[in-house]
Amino acid sequence: GGGGGGGAAGSMAAENSKADAVFKPTLHRSTNGSVRAIAQHPVMPCYVSGTSNGELDLWHYDQQHSLSKFRSYAQSKTKITSVHFSDLGNKFGATMSSGDLALWRFLAQDESDEPFLSFRAHSRRTNDFTFAGATSLVVTGGVGSGSDGGNVALWDTLLMSTDRSCQAYPVRFFNVNDSGTLSLAYSKASQRIFCGGSKGELTVVDLRQQKVVKTWMAHEGGVNKLVIDEKHGTLVTASGSGAVKLWALNNLRQIANFDGVHARSSFSVSGVVGMDLAGDSLFTSGLDGSVKLTHPWLLFGGSTI
Image (cartoon, rainbow, N blue to C red; front, side, top):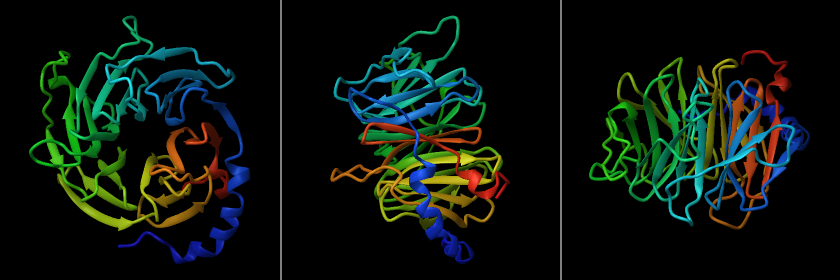
């Protein structure tokens, strides 16, 4: 079933014209590689960014210089493809173009700039991951996943060894599309995983039923990033075309569209390449090196959609 709502079509053009004003502020610009991923801490006024050079930096809102750097075990030319904090903010993780997922402790007594857990999640490339609520479960999406070939995998980190020489095995594979998975988001309310594909498709996996329950075309370009706002009942999608869209979680109807949030480029990955949500604040980043902050729900009076 499609997600476009006819009743919202009349307001789309007006909303598109507001995109520049709504997404105007720039928080910082990276001087060492494009900002490919960002993650806002759920409580503290700081965020982590990951670059095309494989660097991870911790930033404060009001400072133009990073507070600290985190190291991964990945190869030197590996790109950071996603960064996410856990719901409690006590750990965060990053996926990489090498196929790895690494997890760090945050603000702990034994905090280190090196990850406490790192493993190869997908054989060719890992594009995104998500913590499945306040549990030890994580879900990864990418290209290639061993013998089963699933491009979405469910892992239990408690069952995994911190020894990087040990092989990691997922709890379950899901083959959600033919072209690989670019992005993931987890809804705690429905226990569903939303998966964005490289051809613009969105797929919904129900973890309780352990199966795919819905697929539809959401963007013209690949769905680079997804975030879920349970408070407003909204799914936010960002594409390689530079567009950001809002969807109602209850019926998956499109309710807003912002074109040109980040400029397109001639490269294979373009437009919006990083996105995260904290409270009513939506962060986006692009290959232009900028990180932007906005509050798109103010267009709807801040009410639940």
